[in-house]
Image (cartoon, rainbow, N blue to C red; front, side, top):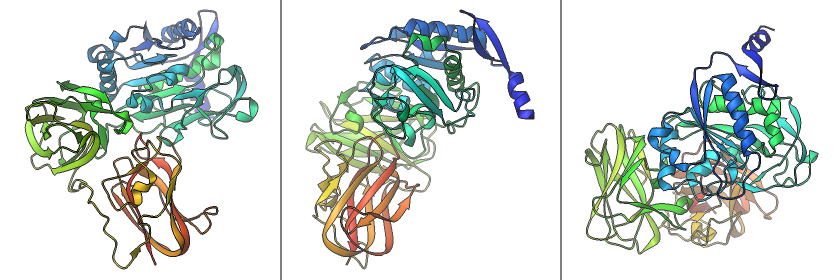
Length: 532
């Protein structure tokens, strides 16, 4: 009873605008919110109603709304004045590369993102944004009534809602299910309407920490009527308050990018001389290119302190050169360097590694040196901290564990998906740990090897690329239909997973991934099955 009294005491019903009740929370500090509604594709008629509703919510809840469709507002200095940025029904490519970098820096500094409805139909060619919004739009049926099932009855954006929330809206299907990377707040019950394509698990609102900041998204809000609906307005208000950091919620702990983990080169916060280029073989389809002698990249969200190892994924049909890892600035303390030799083509990536021996402070910088002309492209990099050495460049052939026979070499392989033709399933059994299979950027995914006949399987060895599976199962089958789990994990940290299982008779062995560790797919240099 005491909790109920406190809860209702904190809520004040005020009447503004059209006389509709808007939930107002006492004691929020004053802050500013940027509402961005630029469209480069379909334009929603409800945008003016959305802006009006957000202004009214701000008036009632102690925040100021600046509404704009001018992407020039996305500068590091300007964004620093806002506690949250709302992408209100944006569509298409709305920010250029410099503005994208400003948004990334804003989030790294602890900013908040709110995505409303068509925010998921935005910036398909900016991989960072795909992680920010959580899932991209796929399709929608006609506007109709639906039952929204509230999963989180505590979050400020859903606590006020009935657990079965019946309303009318345009109901998005998404290209991927965000559940593996986000905290789902509410789902659509596809049995209550027509045209859903995601099945029994159809998230429609979610939140999560992301790259140092907070994100909140709702797929609802297509109709102008939504913005005069008290429940929906309170839904928006709770999302803004969470993203702005004025109220805490169980969406995960907001942290800076992990001490160990892959950093996309194009996520730099500052640079000199380089360009972001589209590359089919790069993770997320983009890399940093046009690198000449003396160019550099700075990463404000990546600390140099405690760094002991460095690896980078690079491609070069040019002169090659050297990557210098520096602390604080492009001319700061040199922590270490690694040579980059030509790889045979601009789409042919290899991993180079080095040990970092000097101590540094401040953000990490990469400086590039070499001869005349273009040196190389950088896709992503990993910083190792503590006593763990950097992951070595893959050896050309797998090393069999003692006391077992390699059964999978050259055998037929099938997979649930392939990122593109350059990363075929067969690469995992070709004996070359410099070639790999990579899946689509979604969960779940699987890859299976046919041993040709029933064998006694006792060990599976996985050599992960930088995009690895956090949670997966090793499964076996005698008929390629009925599968038995031989091993499972929810805490893989990439690198090499060498898994011993009880001797099992099987012809087929597969890795069934349920949670990716990165925004990309599952990527394996080698899948080695041992036994007799």
